[in-house]
Image 1 (cartoon, helix red, strand yellow):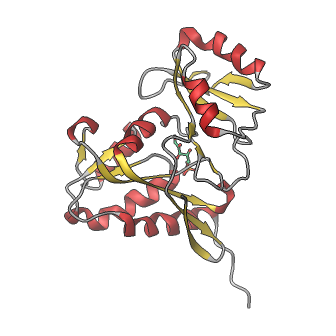
Image 2: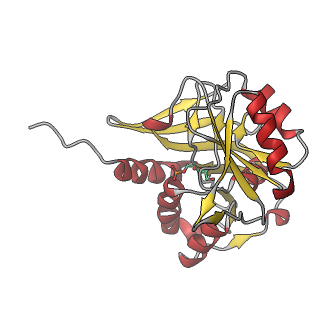
Image 3: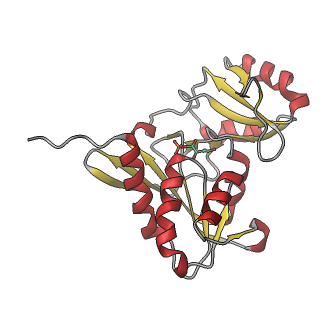
Length: 229
Ligand code: 5RP
């Protein structure tokens, strides 16, 4: 009888556990945000005695880590991290990612920048040829929103302010998120460089500077390890 295919939740559990192989005993680990990372955090609890703690990329991940007895350190308390483990909304063939579906992109980029190795954990649905089918999250300072919307419109994008409970979502940093549809990001590094310079943009959810060195991709056949140059 054929095996029942794993659900997306089971694939996330699989890849969350696989990421434990990249945690360096005795060293602080960088921890991202999202449902896939939650599976990693749950697995990390099993080795909490072997690490001094974690640097977290969101209030939500901090709360989950602490609830499981894993100490959370301030990002400014570490000079560098051996590894940062996080999910993605999309990842291309070079390890460039589109991130921010969980609105944590700014702190994710900050923690990723501290790390020598970014390990992306994702299920196979996240692999794409070209970034942009998933609406691009951009954290913005609210007074700049309309102007930034017009700048995206000039590029062919349709931006809208992310809502929560009938009001603009407020990030951990007290700012808003624009989700931009209709973009095809063929040159992620150039795109990230350009949009990052627009006044009022806090962080654009393209991770090309802080791209993944490794992707653990959960597929129907198990976890595939992809390494990028
Ligand atoms: C949060 C992120 C997440 O990594 C991304 O949204 C993927 O989340 P999930 O694992 O829930 O699919 O960037 O800001």
